Length: 555
Image (cartoon, rainbow, N blue to C red):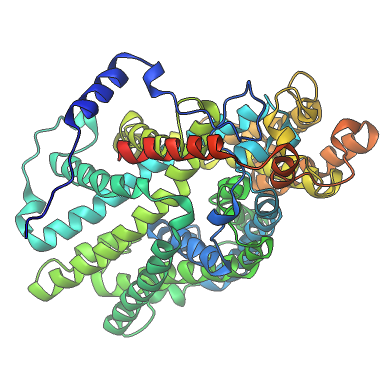
């Protein structure tokens, strides 16, 4: 029997590649005429409200997502770092639980907006900030995502290094031919590049099909981390000296240190508090997002305790404090059995970093790119662009090696994100009472235009919420710049200040001078708009299929 092979039109592929290399117009996506956006406003199916067939995320999917995001190398490091500031593990537990609730409750508030309206963060934020001022929020989030994508690529490169060293021990001794000023070795570049190669195919997985990937991580990373902790405590004979250590802080110093630690616990996930709509819009039902309220504090405490116990026991086993789990794995490379354990642990940590970078950075950044350039970018193209820029344009290896002040700046970015989240929550729940006209979110001349595309209430609130804590951020970046004790303490409660001020002040502005055009009597969903203006006909369906085919050809 003779099998026929599918024919590949090489000439068509080469012609398409040549056109895209020489013409910007060749990159244009097909216009989806069924979009809820006005005819003269370009949109695409990745920016439009999610249709019913793509609403696949259940409560378990969100549980898997958060296990994917929390159970990683950074979660282990965050837990162990709490001990370094002089607090005990007993003092850490309530701080983690409170910090987790300060993440999960705003996440549920903003996540409900996405689950009900079926729109992404760049579209949802227009309701409160105005059509054009929302781009400030979009660009701010985009920069953060690109930066952290590169940083996580560096962590992924460390995982690759341990895996390859376990297979070929000589990999650890590759001669370095890279100048010291670059901040990376030849071996480091090889591992970094291999990690980028591994994550690249994952960029083509649609968001609504990520559930199984997140579930797989949830059932592999936690048992592996627990196994590491059990092994270390068994070998040490106890949980280690850090569990018996007394607090080295007292009085007001201890109080303000607790606040500082609490802000760091909250701040790491404030970005997702703002942009959770990127994922919650794929929920099967709005109630699916409520599973985040209890799950985040519990999962956060679990990962923090892994880091605390593992670091404490490792001090007994190896004679020094080792904060990074990959550095603990590196201690096992001396025997065949140890190398096997190092390989499999590093493999699972690698999978952890891959999923975190995919869901927490690449996908979120792709939504921003789609909003900024909807005529040329869809989610798939946006993910590729985000990965390329994040991994190579920011040179994260150099940042991690030398620019601690820049890392402090990125960590301090919560002073911008907390007010954004507060304004969005207040606007949707308390000002507009959950009544949004979804098609109007896509119209630059619609009711969410406010004043020339800017909601002055949100702009003033951002200034009032951010300005007083800016000196504290500057001091965190460069501690040679001295500021008053009061400003330092204010910065130590930056999330509390930013959230409370933004919610209360935004509500007050709207109570005194509301924008009545945006206070509509009921919700107008995308489905209702399409029903009134006509369901998808053959022309529109063909247009959607054509856009999907464009993405398939690119793959």
